[in-house]
Length: 75
Image 1 (cartoon, rainbow, N blue to C red):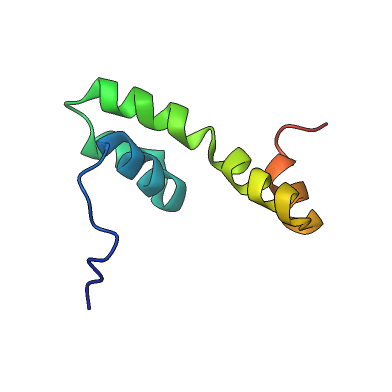
Image 2: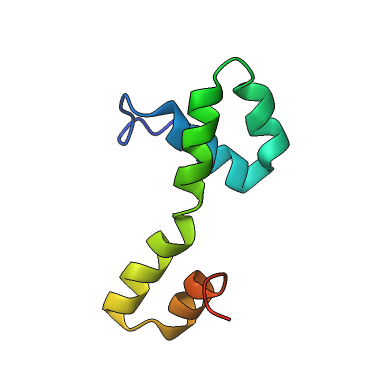
């Protein structure tokens, strides 16, 4: 089954970042071998994933998800 509800034209870099987070950067690098700008942007986007988790957790009071999202930023 394919759920097309959220399908839209978007940034290839966002898709690459999601693939890299799930399957690793070697796959994303192979997929974007001819598109260095998309790969560069994907790395920048992926670097925000933890903060994208932390913000809603902070707003909702979910301390476990907040701690997990901030784990790489707090020493």
